[in-house]
Image (cartoon, rainbow, N blue to C red; front, side):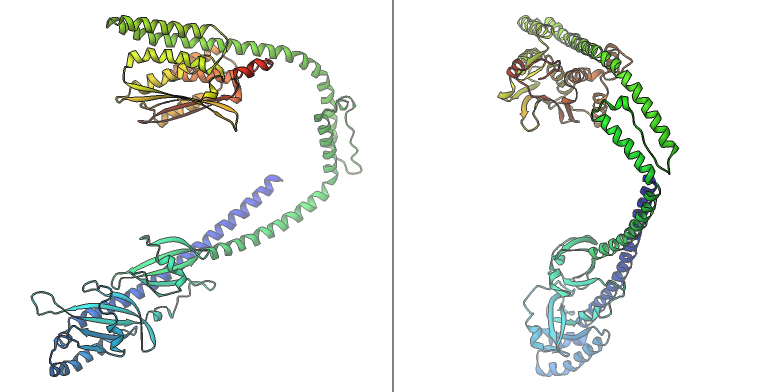
Length: 594
């Protein structure tokens, strides 16, 4: 039934989501197509305006009037220039006025007041021979966009500015016939010039104009409403059109449809389950009694083992329930008899498991010594060949201290004792690598008395030097630090080197090896160690330490391994925080702590 209901819910949700996406996609595509049509229409108007302005600017009659100096010349050229301007206005119904103002004081305005255009002279610089938007101006009680273009004299060897052409364009008429993209929604339009002045549209959409992005489509929230915005540039007039589509409206419409469908499906499922429950009430009651009896046994009511359970099903019964009840009572009897045998064997098995763990830990620790001894003796041979007698004596003394430490003493030592051996090891390596790397210690004072397993830091330090710093061609840094996390109660020990690091593929291999079980049940720890050495030979020290820590602490232990090729490697051990004083005061219960 759960599977059936889950399928119904998944199909319903999937259908709703697909419908919402299809509805939104179709509506947005339609709106985008309509927006492109509007933008193409506006671009066509601006291109016409640019052609008209260009034709007038370089018309011989207009040029003659603008450069006329005597009253007689002005009078003769005025009517011809005026006729040219009125003729050009008939080419576009969107142009409400055309005006000319020359450097010689000659002015013509077909309909508007010439003084209105004179106010814009000397204002924002015009962009050469192209139209420039100067904002809005009122002409014959019509609020228009004012476009301007500089006029240069044609018959001069060098271009000479002789006047300015103004076009008053009724941009509001661009949007009188908005496309019916949807019966439920019509997008918002905003037209702005290159200065960010809104020529058409609500001023509350100023953040859209100020967004200053070159993407054709982007999203922006204005007054708490999330809009999908398409923008179109009109280079002939240095303007930009923004089409704003309310995304939240689409989402609410889709959610309303999905909610209605889900409610209908929920009502049908509720009716179906009501009929089902009424039909199977006797079976449900019997199963509830059986479940309650099982819970009583789980909660420790041991007398139920012998008494068993009796279920009265009434007139409508289930053969399966009766068979389950009989089988369960028989199982209780056998369980009661087996409990005593299991309890007797448990203590013996527990003691054997503890002995096995101690044996495994001792073997793993013994594997560190030959590995380390091989590397150190190789270095001593190199010293002997170079006649470094004093260095050989120091190295031999340090090596002797390390081996005495590794084979004698308690399993758990303080961090301070462990670091003394690490110092001896690093002294040995300093003879080998000289100034190849520097060593930094960042050990918190409150961690020095913390208890950790013996010989867990040195193998990781050795790995950092041999596989990280030694192959590197540049001087490196080795950092050893410790700290306490008071919130989670663990001790953190980290070894960081700025060596060659490792690739992500190699890092994943080591992390996977760390996550593998300590050893398989069918193999001994010796067999598992040989398998681990053959598969991960260059990281055997790290895996050895990880295996020992798992055997010591179990789930209370964590290892964090990070590395980046060419940057370095960081190994962090996290174990329970326990000081030497706590070890002395607490009773030993077989659990290792640090």
